Amino acid sequence: MEFEPVTGRLREVRVITRPTADGRSSISFRNFVVEMPFTKELNLSIGSLLAVETMRPDTYLILEVADYVPVHYGMINMDGSIPKEIRDQVMEEVERSWQRKENPEMWIDVFTYPIGYLATPEGFRKGYVPPLPGSMVRILNKESFKNFVCAKDGVDIGTVIGQGVPLTINLNKALIYHIGIFAFTGSGKSNLTAALIRRILRYTNAKVVIFDVSMEYSVLLLDQLLTRNSKILTTDKYPPDLSLSTRKFMRTHVIPEDLEEIRKDLTKSFEELLREGKVQTLYVPPQGVINMTYGDLLKLVKDQIEDKYTAFSQKPLFSLMLKKLDAFMRENKVSKEALLDADVIPIIEEIESEGKTAGLKDNAVIFSFLSTLRSYVNSETVETEEYDVEKLAIDILDREESSPRLFILEMSNLEEARELVAYLIDEVMNRRKRSFSNTPILFVLDEAQEFIPFDTRQKDKSELSSNAVEKLLRHGRKYHLHGLISTQRLAYLNTNALQQLHTYFISVLPRPYDRQLISETFGINDTLLDRTLDLEVGQWLLVSFKASLPHDVPVFFNAPNNLTELRNELEKSGSTNPPHDTK
Ligand SMILES: Nc1ncnc2c1ncn2[C@@H]1O[C@H](COP(=O)(O)OP(=O)(O)OP(=O)(O)O)[C@@H](O)[C@H]1O
Image 1: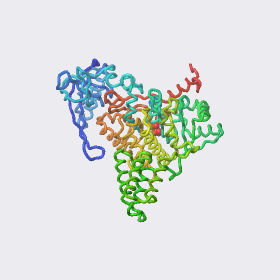
Image 2 (image 1 turned 180 degrees about the vertical axis):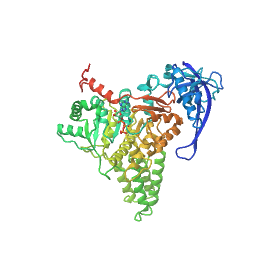
Image 3 (image 1 turned 90 degrees about the vertical axis):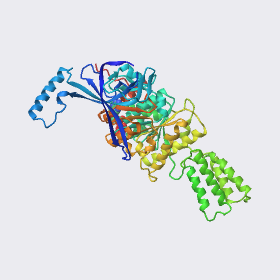
Image 4 (image 1 turned 30 degrees about the vertical axis):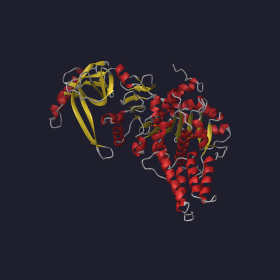
C-alpha cells in the first residue's frame, strides 16, 4: 500500500443513531473525524480512502471520506452572541489567513466511516478493529486506490471522480447478481443503461432483452442494432411501404437534441433496419387467450371437488390430485403463474392408476378430465404466422452463435407491457428449466416502478409482472437469467425485488426516504449517500455487494456519454459522415 505525502490524525469517534426508513427500528453508523492540514499538497476528495492504525499491530482500518470542511480555530466558538463589530473583525482576519495558507490555526475536518476492511501485511481482508484515537491517518495514493477498488482486467465504465483513474468492473459478476439503477428523472439513467448494455454485448456472451416503454433504446443503441443480429419488437403495426414505415418510425421515436444534426443519417439507418426485417410486430394474444397456468389447473381441480355433480367416489381422487400438485409445486418452486407443462404428466399418471386400482369405470369423469389434460400439455402449439411470445422466447433462448443477441420490446400500452413482461419471463424461465444452457440472458426493465410496484394490483396486471420479475430476481441466477432494473423512486418498488440486487448505481435521489433505504440495505453511511445530491448529470455512486468490484467500496464516478459512443460507432461503420473539421 502506498500513500500520499500529507497525513492527518484521528481526532474523534462519533456514533450516530437514527430510526430506520420504515420507522420500525433504528440503525447506527460509526463516523470518524480526521484532522488534516490545510495545505495545497493535500490530495483529498469525497470517496478517497484512508488507513488508520488500530489496536492490533500492523493492522490498519480502511476509512472512506464522506465529506470534508475547512475549519479555522479563530471561528470555532463564533456565533451571534459575539458583538457584530468583533465578528466582522475576526472574519476579515480569518479570510486573510486562508490566503496565507499553512497556518496552524486552520485545518480540514474530514468525516469518514469504516468500510469494513482491514489492511494487514498479508493484504486486505474483511473486518473491523477499533482504531487508536490520535494516531496517524494516511491517504491511499492513486495507484493503491486503483488496486483496491477497481476490478483487475475489468471493463471500463467511466472515470473515478477525484482520482481520475478508469473505473473497471467485473461485468460478468455484475450481471449474475442483478443490477439496479436509481436516480431522479433526467440524471442519466437511460444513458448509463445504454452504455452498460453496449459493454455487455461487447465483453460478455449475454443476450439482452429490453422492455422499453419510453421508446428510447432503438435510438440509444442504434449502432448495435445495425451491426449485430438483433430485433426491435413492437405491438404497433407498420405499413408495408418502406418509406412510410421509416417515416412512422422516426415519428414515434424521440431523437435526442444532440443527434438532431445527424437526423438524415438516422433516417437512413432506420430504413436499413426495416428493410432487413429487424423491426417486427409482436403478436400479443387478446386477454383470455393465453396458455393455462398451474394456478388455472389448481382452480379447475378445486372446482371439480366443489361441484355437486362430481361423483362422490371421484372426489377423494381430485383431492389427492390437488395435494400432489401442491407438493410438486412447493418442491420445485413452481409458482401459480407458471405455464402448465409436461412436468405435470407423472401426477396425471399416478391419479389415473389410483382410479383404476379403485375400480372406477373407464368412462368416469376423472379419466376424461385427466386425458384432456394430458392432450393439452402434450399438444404442440398451434403454428401461427404471427411472431408471438413463444417464438420470441425460442429466439431469446436460441444457442446458435448467429442468433439474435439484442431484443428491444417497444410497448406503449402499460397494461399490455406488464402482461408481456410476465408471460415472456415465465416462458423463458420454464423453457430454460427444461433445456438448460449457460448463455446469460439479461432482462432490462426501465421504469421498474410500473412493473414491480410496492402496491401491486390484479386489475392493472402489475400483480402478474411483479410476481414474474420477483421470481426472475430470486431464482433466475440458477438458470443464468438476470435483471437490470431502473427507476426514479425506490419507495414505490416491491422491496423483495430490491433485496435481490447486488450492484446499485445511484445518482440524485431527492427524497431522504429513498436514500435511507439504500443506506440501510447496504450499510452505507448516510453522509456519503447525501453526497449523491451534489452529483451532476452522468455522475454516479456505484455500490456493489460481492459483485462488480473486488471489494465492497462505494465509489463515485463519471459515466461515459452514450451518445458520443453511439456517434463514434456509427461513424466507424460508415453510417454517418465524420463531423466537418471546424479548424
Ligand atoms: N454521462 C453522461 N455524459 C453526458 N451527458 C449525459 C450523461 N448521462 C446523461 N446525459 C445526458 O443527460 C440527459 C438526460 O439523460 P437520460 O435521458 O439518460 O436521463 P434519465 O434519467 O433516463 O431521464 P428520464 O427519467 O427522464 O428518462 C440526456 O440529454 C443525456 O444525453
